[in-house]
Length: 58
Image (tube, rainbow, N blue to C red):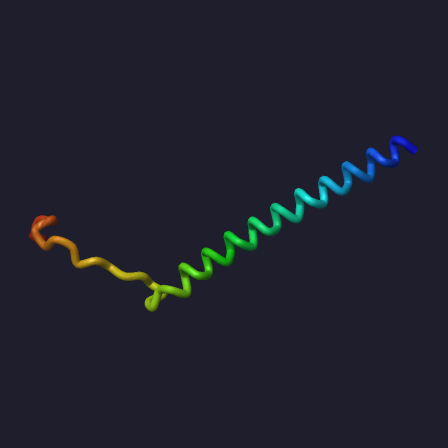
């Protein structure tokens, strides 16, 4: 009987850990999707920057 209780306890702990890891994955995917949906251009923006930063082409 004692082994069965240890088995049930271990099983419950593993289930809790798996649920926690799944929740972390859901949160990461939601954050990533929120960042992507905030962009208007799927290609991304290119900053103009400082024109003197690069030498002119030959």
